[in-house]
Length: 262
Image (cartoon, rainbow, N blue to C red; front, side, top):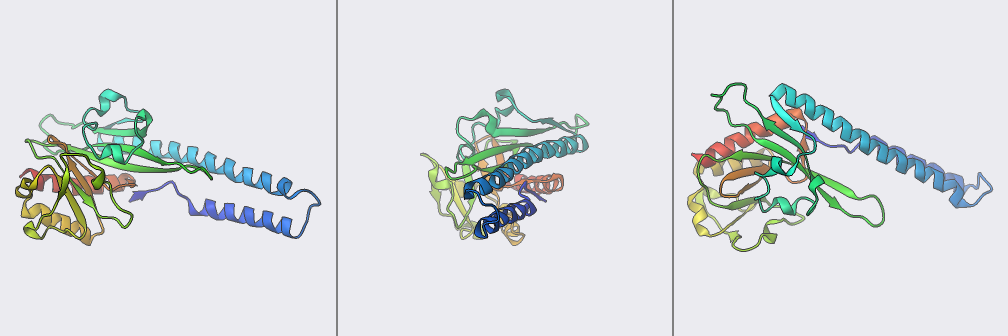
């Protein structure tokens, strides 16, 4: 269900090409400068790598267009600022995407219910991009698919972050956010950090919601959740999903959302 444009077979092929080049140099098959042997092989790898990246992007768009038609979504490959107004107030998004880059938002899905009276809440879904720059080689791009659900009532600001071996982003949130220690309903504090404006946030969470968080951990689903006081976003950092995965996580987040809004 997780989507990735990483193809192991391509990197195995690159490794074989470089290995062959090394053998040609080692045994002096060609009586020329080593650089003349290795340079075209490296360029072949680079050219193929960037071609595959472009091809993967086109394939991703095609699959999302197909999913949008089946799920009754409007699909916008390159959303404009007015399309993103509901997302910009979330503090953690700025920490998982490229700063001040309009192109860092992409592939927006907006649900259009077939019936006016359809009461099933479906999220707005957008993908954000984060670039890790590498001076010694190609930059590494990370994509996160973000699901937004509109709250039916005013809710407190908070951020629940899945703990990671590599650290998190919660500690980068500015005042009035601070880390909150919560004991209520066996909140899984070994797996999640909670950030909010004050300790009163503890009263907001129900036993049903915390139980769902714990069940998600049992299925290896560590979700980040943020409230901007009006709406709620859910995401698994640096992950995006296939059509099947989008449907699965939409259902998962709807259940969590319902537990928060009861």
